[in-house]
Image (tube, rainbow, N blue to C red; front, side, top):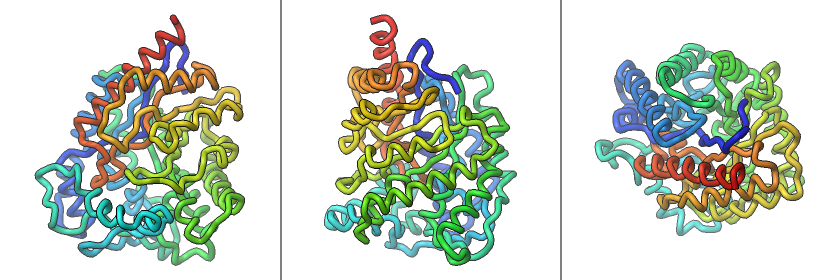
Amino acid sequence: MKNSKDRLLTTHAGSLVRPASIVVAMRAKEAGESYDEQALAADARQSVAEVVRHQAAAGVDIPSDGEQAKASFFRYLNDRLTGLTPTRLRPGETLPTQVAGKDRRDFAAFYAQYDPLASTMWLPPEVPRTAGPPGGGRAVCDGPVSYKGQALVQADIDNFKAALAGQSFEEAFLPAASPTIIGYGTVNQHYPSDEAYVYALAEAMKTEYQAIVDAGFLLQIDAPEMPAMYDRMLVNSVTIQEYRRYAELCVESTNYALQGIPEDRVRYHICWGSWNGPHTTDIPLRDLVDILLKVHAQAYSVEAANPRHAHEWEVWKDVKLPDGKILIPGVIAHTTNIVEHPELVAMRLKHYASVVGREHVIGGTDCGFSQGWNSARVHPQIQWAKLQALAEGARLASQALWRG
C-alpha cells in the first residue's frame, strides 16, 4: 500500500451515488418486482466507468468502483451468501436498524419527519416517490452460510479493471462488508449464538476478500458497526466495558476472515452511521481506538469531519499510530451539502500530520456518499465538488508540509 511519500494522497470511503437507471432497477429488485437483470448489469458496467472518470477528474489518487452494482454496502450479500432469505418492507415501513437506537428514541419527533424523507431526498427525478417500498428489509439467516457470489465479485473486478484502463491512479480499492456488519443487518435464526453466526459469516467472506486482493486491488473492510452498534445497545444500558467486548468480536472475526491476506493490502473503515441526525450517543473514538488498532490492516479509515467527531484528531496526540500504519481521516463530511473550503480541508490534514506524521496520512471522507441505491446523502453534483475540494485541500496541505 502506498503512503504519502512526497505529497498527501487522497481517497474516499467507497460508495458513490448511482444513476437513475440503476436506482429504478434496484428499487424494483428490492421490492420483489420484475426488472431487466442484463440491463442492470450493463448499466453497472457503464456507471463504474463513469465514476472512475469522475474520480480522475476530481483528483482522487486511490479510487473505488463506487459500489455501483451493489444494492447497499452490505445488503448486496443477500445475493452472494447462502442461508440468507431477504424479507420485503411493506409501504410505510422502515428498516429495524433505523428505529432501534437510543439516538432515535431521544429525538423521536425529529426522526418521525427525517426518516421518510432521507431515502427519497436525492432520488433521481425519474424514480417515482410513491411506487413500492423505499428499500429492502432485513434478510433472515435460516440455513448454513457459505459463499456463492464468485461470479458477482468477478464481475465487480472485471468492471473496475475495464474502467481503470487508460487512467492514471496511485492505487485502487474495492470495498467489502465486514462479518459483523452483515450480522448487524440480518436476523440469525439458524446458528446457536450470534458469535457462531458471525464466525460463519467470516468463514464465508474469506472468498470475496481473497478474490479482491488476488485481482490486485486493495481490500477495504467496511465496519461501521464497530462504533455504531453502541447506540443500539445503549437502549439496554450497555456499559463501555460491555460494549468493548462486542468491538473485540468485530475485530477478531475480521482478523479470522483476513487470514492469509497481507496487512499491506487491507484498509479498515469505521464510522458512526451515515444519517444526518444528532448522534449525541456516539461512543467516543478514544474508548475504542486501542481495539481498532488490533485489526490486521495497514490503513484505518476513520470518520473525522462531522461536528461530533472533528475534534478527535487530538486522540492521536495520546495514542501512537503503530509503525508502518496509515491513517485515513475523513476530512470531507457526507452529512451536509455544504462543500468544504479547501483551506479547511488542508487545516484538518495538517492537524493529523502534526500528530502521526505526514507520510502516515491519506485524506479521505467520513463515509460513502450513497451507502445504498436509495441512500444518497448528498446530490451527485455535490459529491464531485466535495472530492475536488478534498484534492485541492490535499495540495494546499502538501505545499505547507513538504515545501512550507
